[in-house]
Image (cartoon, rainbow, N blue to C red):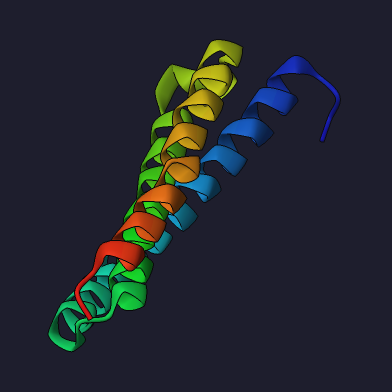
Length: 108
């Protein structure tokens, strides 16, 4: 990096483009992984497989947030950084009790 404001901004935009590319790639993988796991879990009656598939949806949501965060003017925005951080944790931490409830109440 050159140390100038323009050089730092250019490097940040280059890295943001890389983050978006990786997030799109992982989103595609997680969509396929989640669909296969959910379908297999439903066919087998497996709570664990369905939970694994639904977890892929949560990870996919995080990828969408990363794409949103690193697009356009949000690349340099501290407000967008705070918003993206606060949008992911409730979805991930709220999932565990749902899987536990389903596992306990599922017919055997």
